[in-house]
Amino acid sequence: MKLGRLNHVGVAVPDLAKAIAFWRETMGAAQVGEPFAMTEQGVLVCFMEMPGGGTQIELLAPLPGHCPIRAFLERNPLGGQHHLAFEVPDIAEARAAFEGMGKRVLGPTRMGAHGTPVFFIHPKDMEGVLTEIMESPR
Picture 1 (tube, rainbow, N blue to C red):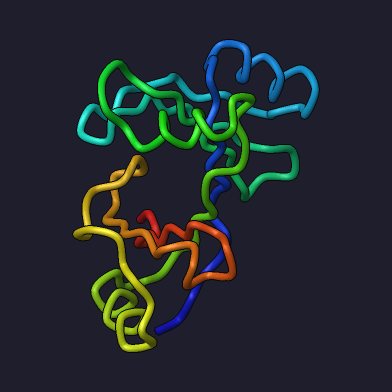
Picture 2 (picture 1 turned 90 degrees about the vertical axis):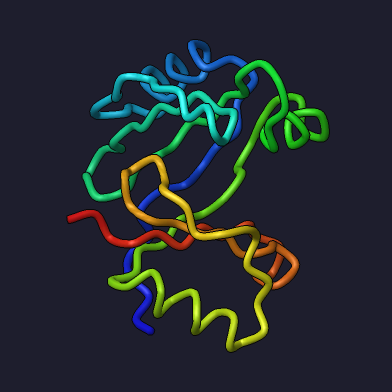
């Protein structure tokens, strides 16, 4: 398995509009995408390109109802880093490799916010960091 570049940092936020303003005004986000709902994950998502290009910030705000981001925000009311997402050329090969290393993959491989297959690895198996593995966008 070949691990690729860091695609994005996922940040859980309690207020999406406030977070967009912060990342635009304070951190100089170069481009801010249109927020969209991922109802199956229970989140509202907004991607931003950071200065210099190449890396994105993914803002995640909870939709009404159950969603894992809500539990994260209950523990971290101000929000914060939720996960790191790394690209791989072949999601099935990557999943098999991580499982072969004894890493706990959380749930099935599913379609991610970039429209490519993704899976998550338990933070206890990744030095405390929830890690998303995503197939590289074409």
